Length: 109
Image (tube, rainbow, N blue to C red; front, side):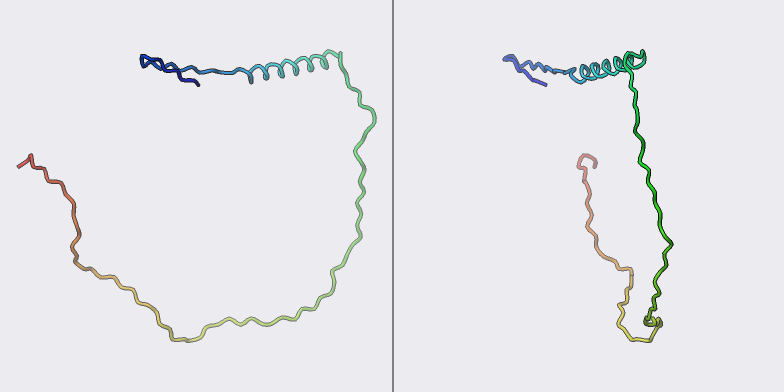
């Protein structure tokens, strides 16, 4: 967008729009239509001869897991009596002065 200001203070805005994407899209669509018509009418044809997917043979023999002997420790879980210092949290009501804000209207007396 371009902005032009004249000496008398008027401002003119000029917006330039490009239709390049529309033109390219139309050309691609036309090419696809022509190619489709050429194949549909038999003017073009494609004969694919030969070719196949490869054959894959997978074979495996039965296996066995190794013999493993595991020696581990025993885990013991329990509780024991201990003396610890634990903080005590309390709430109580106390009266304090809180600042207030107000508006005084001198016109009403």
